[in-house]
Image 1: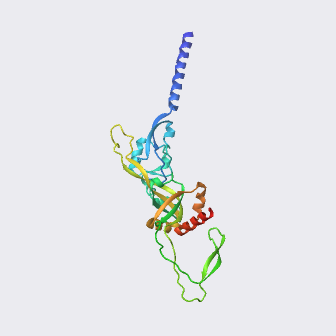
Image 2: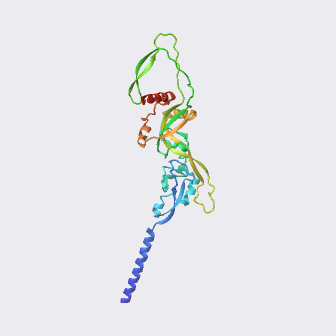
Image 3: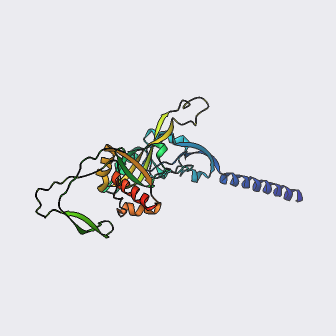
Length: 304
């Protein structure tokens, strides 16, 4: 009887150990190859594979089902995978963040990215060396510059008459200033009216929000080579242009600036984004060579 009890005890102990090992194995995380963003990927970007990498992570199988795995990513790329939202560098891709096939149709188009009818996206060429550090979502100011120093006046204005003053209201701020003008109602004979605009000039043309940074791309010679399976197909270089969202009312100004001069990009504080989107952060009046000349001599005389 005693031997039987010992035998039963041994059997129960073995069963308990096996049960513990089995349950532990069921709960033990399994290694999965997860697709991870190699860089910042803006929303509605068509994925090519060069902007991601593969990382092996221990995950619960139920959790792994929510991630984009390496084994299925190639098929998603073949059917036109598109990022549905912004993907940050080092972030594992969730299935809900990537659309493919019929779900991705149209998402890679900039027109679909715009959800407000009074917004326009402009590609703004930039020079990497003159570009501040930017990421999608940053608020920027666009400055238009044209002309060279010592350029001639475009037109000379001559107005004959008596000077008078009128109050002038600034529509942006509501403030009132005094504006000197020439009273042309005097009967002093023929009057000649011309305009003077001395080049160069700079005008704060528009404000906008960076939607995407477009970089130069070249073929990676190591792509597909033996032992280099994780090499991207393309190597990205400097930023060549920015896709900037501007207000519809500023679209013609930006188009004119891009066609006839040079655009410089400056970063605005993040707190200005709501004002820019609401159109309550107006650009400045602009500066001409005459303005610069006047300020130069004014400050120079004041320091003597």
